[in-house]
Length: 335
Image 1: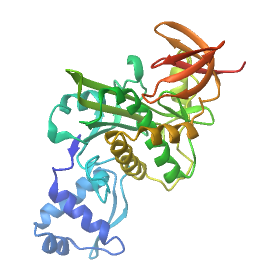
Image 2: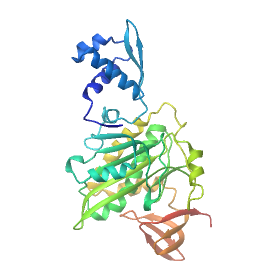
Image 3: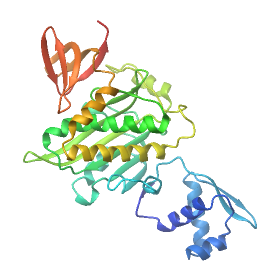
Image 4: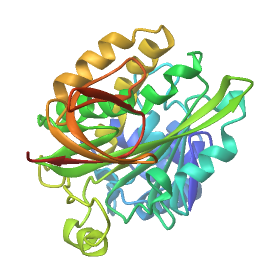
């Protein structure tokens, strides 16, 4: 099942009318007259709307009434009243896909797809950093976003860190909880991972052609099932879920908040206002000031995390020396 924000105009018209008149019953004839479609078309759209997880009550002689919206991240739900200019104004939904990141990469070179969002209910081949498998069952938010940035190539390594900051702000605004930011691009709650992200960059002649940001959020996943699969994974430090933090929040509310915060961060990057991003990230960081151990291409590094620099690299102090680390697997350790 695949949907985008341009298809199904008839279905969206019927749904929108039900949503804006959800305190009353609407007869098939009323919907037919107002929307200028046949009663058969109305009935077909209602059936499809119900299949997509919307609860629509049907009563003889009264008509139809929308009781509750779908939990699915359908494209028209994402774009509806979204207050961004570019990011998220195009959306594509897949019931199941190998990887939203792979799909986004196929679309990324087209200038018309700037800001497009690809979302899936589940992924069969989701991936994290360094090609690791990302367990992506139903209940999570699995999303990729296409960017065609104007900023310098040197800022590319700061981009996932800045994006993690945007998600942290969105979670705080939506759930009233403040996740910690673990370098380079994980979000944690009480030390357990609730979200992570990766970036695939297409570079040409020392210029960024496009970036694809992949984001995985454990919104309402079964934590125990995922931990059972991942517990033997090196550097695994536990899974957290947003489920139960605030029951009335729907996934689309968090996604819309994230897209709005992400567009703000994206504007700062395009205008080279990186100091503000670094400052805000540092305040929310669980890494800075901690003793850490990093596995890098050049070997293990142990020391104290001092700061991140202008390109997002972690500066570590070790026995009077400082190390600049652009990428690596990090563990917070006691002395």
